[in-house]
Length: 148
Image 1 (cartoon, rainbow, N blue to C red):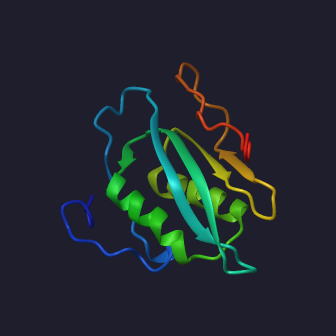
Image 2 (cartoon, rainbow, N blue to C red):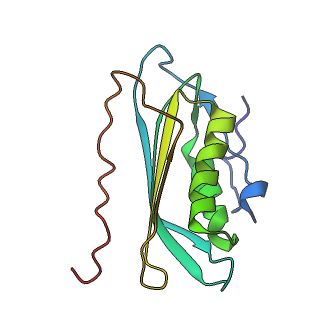
């Protein structure tokens, strides 16, 4: 497996399609465990207005033979900054790409989007039921309350 970002100077990709995700061997492939990535400042663009949309993403996965390298994931998520897509497309598309390339035992993604037009939109996707005996903590993101 070649690493293109770790230890290198890397520019933010122009689009998610241009982003390269790096994967490294799972150091504990015989163990069932959970990896969590949290991106509390995810940004994309509304495909209709071009205005920025903001989300708090939580990605949980049980690794298979590989794990995703975090710098490449950070650059991939950052590449959405100039990408126009609906919340559902961004959230599910990120999950599907990670599953297609990394082939984890299991993956779920929660996209907790801040209000657009006064309505927060939360998007959830997973590959299926989690493996038996996988400790699965709550994603810990409260529902949007506005002024509270």
